[in-house]
Image 1 (cartoon, helix red, strand yellow):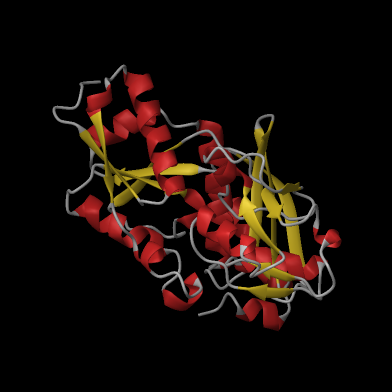
Image 2 (spheres, rainbow, N blue to C red; image 1 turned 45 degrees about the vertical axis):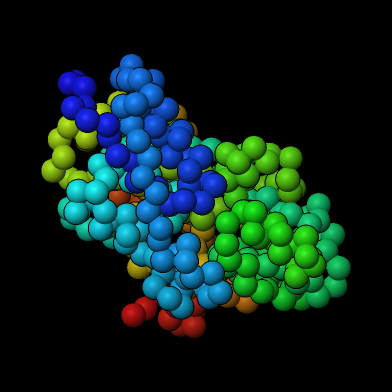
Length: 308
């Protein structure tokens, strides 16, 4: 393909993790196309989610707080593509914006920081998290736990833990690894805490009608990651899931098929509805059906979390 006539503007949030993921994306593009350092510039776009740190996302607009400013920058031509942690991207995206590529997925698991495992925490432990999914899974395993809000980037949350605001917190292994902090925390296995949909995946979006950018990004798309993450996002569509809703899902390629596991959990952890299936790549309808099936089997109280 032709070389860009000017440096490509890669939009990103300004957190250390977001910048690390943006740099990974830029280097992948340079390597794929043989471009020099000056072919790509990074444009930091401050998001509402970065500015507002004292409330849960569900109370102030949900995942759009991570994307709406980057979406605006794309539509208004201020950037050519935007890099996201895919688990922060809303399930339904604007028609004008297209998820064009994903980098190879990193470790999908969570890490518990503050103890070797949840059982090792003291009675009535305080656990800091802003994730409804992690909160519900902790309550399922430790009904005596008290959940408090931990917002902010990795360093902020670790500082809160160091200051004694909680006994433990949970962070994504992928984020810690990308920040060079692989030695922090004890890995929680998938069978103990199924991860969030899209956890560990970095996605790059551009305008759906930007043929040149779509072509350049296609060269760095990791198809296995893309297909698995899209299956997990299809489960979310079936659920109508929001930031209020404790949802976990993981799709893994097994041979020619995708093995998909998903579950919804009540906030107190006393009800879990799960399912698994083997799907063909790209079978979004089957993945959506799994989400709808979870709701059909849920109690009215759990189902109500996904309504309206």
